[in-house]
Length: 125
Image (tube, rainbow, N blue to C red; front, side, top):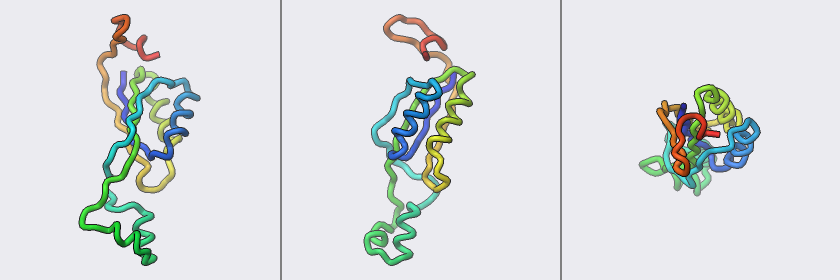
């Protein structure tokens, strides 16, 4: 089993949810808002605005880059569906601009359905 954590743009949530459902990956969790930033110091729109002397954009250029709001999606899939899940997440979220997000794939050793006590891949579907 694989635990997949994806950090995506907020406005890509509905598209991502539909894409996962379309490939049969209906079960996942989403966290409301998570804050963070990548290696880029500022959003490309802020830089563009500052270069065009837009006062609001210039005001956002402080001593420390701001944290950006994203969504975090977590899903656990059988090993055989890992590539499908990752590819689906990439296709649904790629805009080819900085801030598209990240996907982390982690080994998951077991899953247990609380109601029945059963465990393993069977609890994932």
